[in-house]
Length: 125
Image 1 (cartoon, rainbow, N blue to C red):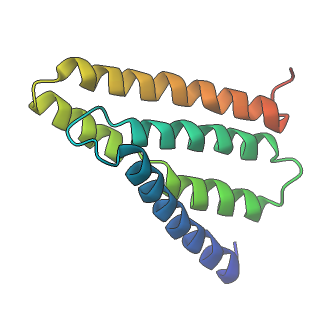
Image 2 (tube, helix red, strand yellow):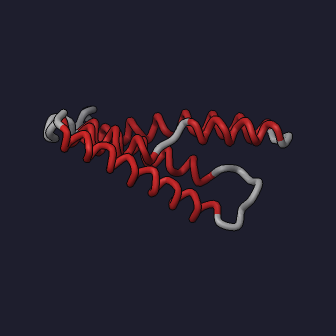
């Protein structure tokens, strides 16, 4: 990866992080102290798109796969927010929602990645 590609990857990560914040803020507007649906949605969308990028790997230049996958979608998705949201839910006595958050994120994000890979052509239909 050359210097320009690295710069593009870092810039894409910043755009992804901004998009994550925006989607989460829109979904969670006016919903304090409830299930973190915004971050769940972000991780499902990000996993789906990362699956598509991975599936398209044969037709994408390797640098673009890294810029879009690791940079943009890596900045967009977040495991740390899922972890923190789950701990905060448990601390507030909402342990069942903490478990649902962890399980739903894992199952739905993995399924979304598989669907994305099918769409991207990596896994035969």
